[in-house]
Every structure is written in structure tokens, then in C-alpha cells.
Image (cartoon, rainbow, N blue to C red; front, side):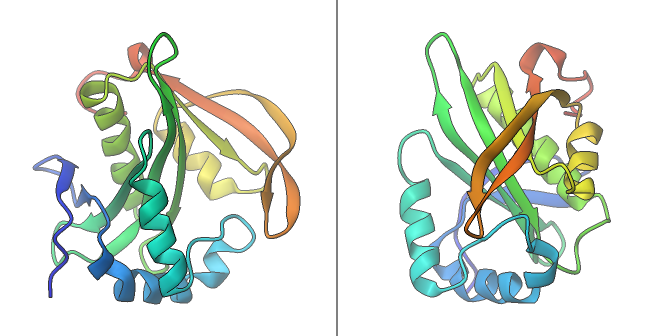
Amino acid sequence: MKPTGRTVASREAARVVLRAPVADDAPAFLAAVDASRLLHRPWVQPPRTAEAFAQYLERMALPGQHAFLVCRREGGALVGVVNLTNVVMGPLRSGYLGYYAFSGHEGQGLMREGLQAVVRHAFRRLKLHRLEANIQPANAPSLALVRACGFQREGFSPRYLKIAGRWRDHERWAILADSMPRGGHA
């Protein structure tokens, strides 16, 4: 059965589409996570069990949380995930981005297309003003990704986030709606 998650953002020329994850995605998602263990270590800990995936869907269904599967336009293969979390409206109008690619799709610019589409969605549809991504300093591919998408380094946060049982340092990167390049690229 083909997943029925609604497509939430796309561009005709793009190689990827974004859609919301649904329960039927669990087998493909968990297989992609399992195949990506070495790629993800020590940067992220995505859901690895059916129960953890169901909890992820519940958490991302709460107000202020937006989950996006980055999928290949041709064939629908799962490329990666972008989560827009802790969205605050009012005078702040911001959110946090977390993301990861799946093995076999990294290094091809597909996650760049997916992240750019999420940034456009956040600024144009959700009318956010600011997006922030916090990245471990040694995660060179992730740092290159946000640079390529127009994010600017704002600072350093020691022992910012607990991953794999350890408090890890992070660099703080952000992009503002009015600094998003014209022509559709984020």
C-alpha cells in the first residue's frame, strides 16, 4: 500500500517532494533507519522501532510540530527527514530544524532540495520569521548543508543537547525570512 501522507511542499523542477509521515510509512522508515546506523552515529537517534515511530508521529502531531519526509519524486523512495519543531508564533515567529538523510541518498544534493523546500514552506506558508538549526561542530556534512541553504552561524552552545546519553556541544545556525534568496532557493 502506498503511504497517503499529504504532499506539503514541492517544486516542479525538484528531484524531491515533501510529505507528512503516516503510520503506513513505518516499515520503509525503519528499514531506512536500520540501513543508516553508521551514517547517523553519533549525530542523531531517529526512531528505530515501530513503537518509537508511532510515538514520533504522535509527538509531531502536536501543535507547533511539523514533520516532513523528503522523498524522491521518481519512485517515492525515502531520502531523509526534516522536522520543524517548537514553532512559536506571535512576535517571535520561529522554529527549530532537525534533519537527517538516509543511506544511499546522501551527498547528492537531495537533502539540500528538501531542506530548501521546508524553509520556503516555513517562511511562505507558515509565515515564520526565523529558523534555527543546532549542529554538532564535527558534523561537516550538516554544516555544509546549512551553509548551502543560506544559514548564518550565530554562535556556539556548549553541552546543548543530549544525544546518545551525552551532552553535546552545538553550533547555532539561523536563517531569517527576509534573508532568503530570491528565485525560490532557501
